[in-house]
Amino acid sequence: MNHRQKLYATAAIALLASGCAATHREVPAPDLVIAPTPLEGAAGEFLSPYNRSGELAPWAMVAIETGLASEVEDDLELEQRGVIDSTVRAFSRTFGDDPRINEAVVEAAGGWDEIRAGTDQSFVEAVDLSTFLYANYSLDPDYRSALAVVFDLFPEVRSTYAGAVRRAATQSAAPAVGSSGP
Image (cartoon, rainbow, N blue to C red; front, side, top):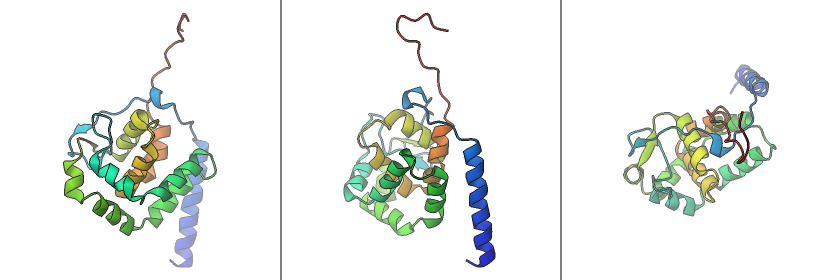
């Protein structure tokens, strides 16, 4: 990368970071997020690591057991604690993705044919998968590991996740029991 390209990349990151800071939204509680409806099977490009039963898909369990996704989990923890900004993490991951990680996760899970065969819900858009997973599974003990596998398989989900969750449509919290409501 020459000097001019570095300058443009730095300017782009600064613009995005300042734009994101100006429009920063709090992360909604998962139970208030309106989850998109998945497609049945593996018809969509972005495959859910969870089956309709709420259990991890077999391919996701195998990929998690390999331990290949731990670096992403560490980044998620740092972001949630506010140590790193999601924009910085998204840029570093988008430009720093190593296709060997993707290949290793696919191979560990049995290959794309096995992954698709073991998937019973999917999405056309990365933001929909992100929102769906957050709303339905973010409190699951295996969620961070499952999300790390998804990030490795689908880098577009990794780069859109934080924004998708922050911009997710939400429902109003139910009035407390005994309150008269609005």
